[in-house]
Length: 217
Image (cartoon, rainbow, N blue to C red; front, top):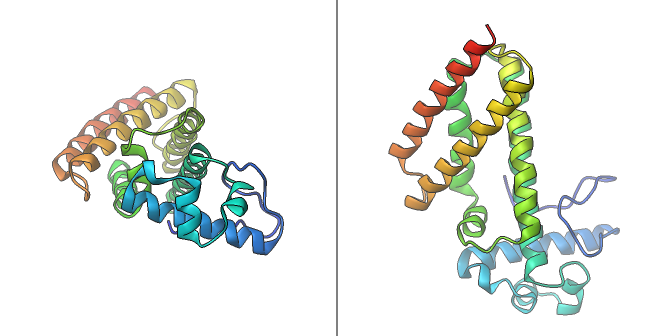
C-alpha cells in the first residue's frame, strides 16, 4: 500500500469529493494534495488537517483545494476512503492467492498480512486512533467491515474449509469485528503491534475457524 494515486484511465476516483477531477493534471494535483494531507496527519495529528495547512503543505492555493475538499471533514473522509480501498484491495489479493495455494494456517496468513499493513500505514493509524472520524467515515467503515468479511468468506471457500451459507457470512463478519478490535489495541500498545496480543488474536480466531468449519460437515 503506497501513497494515494489517481485512478487508472477510465476508472473512478476512490475517495468522496466535492467535485471529481476529470483531467490528468487535476487528478495528479489532487493526489499530491492527499499525499500532503497524509504527511500533515502523521506529523501533526488530525486537528492540523485544515484546508489552509494542507494547501500550504501541497504548495497549492486554498481555492484550488476547496474545489475538491472544502473542510477538515472532507479531507478526513477522502483519506479514510483511500485507506479502506487499499485494505480491500489487499483482501482481494489474498482471495486470489488462496485460490491458487493451500494454506496450512489461514488465520496466521491473514493476521500477518494485515499486521504488515498496520505497520506501514502510519496515516491509517493516526486517523483511526485519533478519535476524530466523521459520521460519513464511520458509516463507510461499517460497510468496509462487511466487505472484508465477505473477503474472508471467499478465502475460506477458496481453501475448501467451509460451506457457503448465511451462517458462514455471519461468522466471518463476527470474526472481522473481533480481529479489528484486537489489531487496533495491539497497535495502540506498540507501533509494531503488541506480539502477545496478536498471538492471542490468532489463538482465538483459529478456535473460531475450527468451530465454523465443523458446522459445515
